[in-house]
Image (cartoon, rainbow, N blue to C red; front, side, top):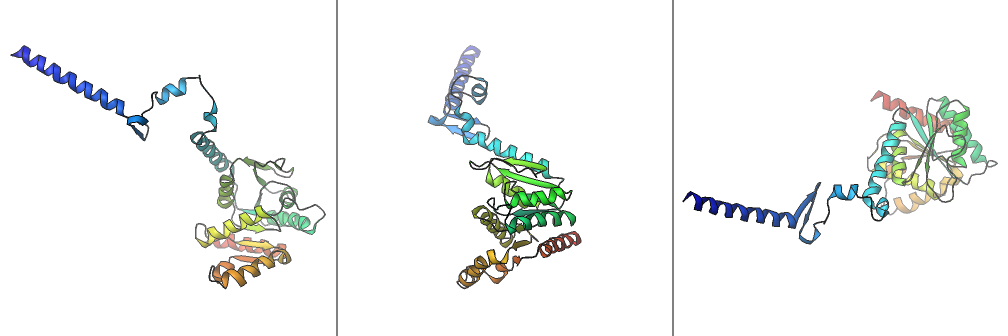
Length: 268
């Protein structure tokens, strides 16, 4: 009877093993991902990691890009965490040194440093170079957050702390996280991109107490007038949305607005 019982138990045990093996073939977890039936890989993650054979196009796949994106965030946060109060200055890369707005950007960079701010730009030529130049010559912190572009040669020579990014959205995060306000000089599509992203973040309260100053009333007046006459009139924006921007030709006024916002933030 014991022998029969043992045989019966062994048969049952063998049957359970076979079922387990069959289930394992039809289902597998790789980290948090579950594969079933035809989707179960024929190799394990460790096996693929340690196997040096085969194509190398994996470095261009989306999971690998996630690691690159993560690395850019870590690098940016690490370099800028102790920056202190800063103001981002935006403007056209096409601004020439003999244009009035170049001199104005240089004056702005200098004035912001004298008011105790670090100056952060996109690190390129034109108005960005001018603002970095003013900040550096004034003995302040001149930061350039560059972006990989096919038609620019990298950071300008007046950037004292520079980071070059692959991804626009990582770079934009750094501007908003480490700048306490934006000053926007005459610029093109990239400048408009930064301006309207900042306006959207303030409007949706993703950021708070974030002053936005447009320097150059002749340049920017048409845009603001269109927003008022078209968007506001059609009920697409509110008066409060327009109030998020201040237009001026006065560098000192732009700096005063940034100082007032800093002091207000310190009181909270």
